[in-house]
Amino acid sequence: MAFLGFDFKTRTFVRYRVRKGVQEMETSTSSEKDTEEDTFLQRLRAEKESYKKLFLQLKELKQEIEHLQHGLERARRQLKRDFERWWNEANQAPKAETQTSTNSRINSLKQTGDPSADAEIAAFYRARDEMMKNTQVS
Image (cartoon, rainbow, N blue to C red; front, side, top):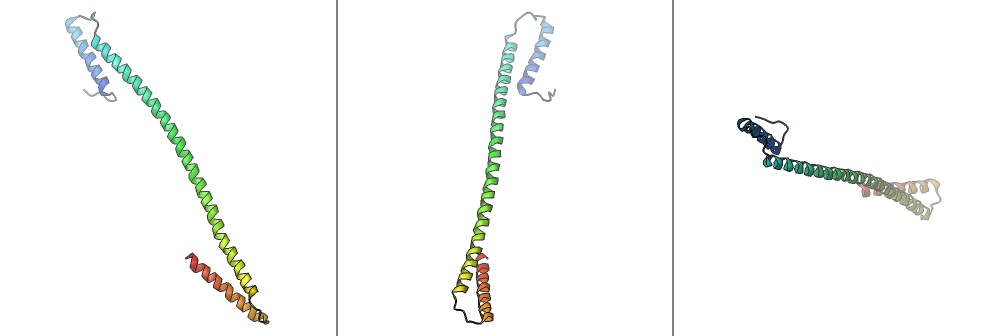
């Protein structure tokens, strides 16, 4: 006989009641107080109470875990934003420094007096600095 959806204790109690009913029909002594049935009922009530307490504890833990997961996700997003902000600032600084150092180097060079030669010299230094910057990044 299969009892679907019942746990072992419930099945045991049902079997006991069936046995008891059969015995009462055979002996016709239903006036006796059955202490074994009371014991089963008390144990069943105690198990139900224990189950309810544990269920409430698990429910509270689930809420706490979900709260912690939400906080962790929020912190992860903030960390990512902070890193991206830092990364962008760090990558912008060398470009500005390179441009400034290139311009100061070009200005500090002795001018030849020939505007086309000075422009070619400046272009050479800019290209060299750009090439150096690209090889350092790679």
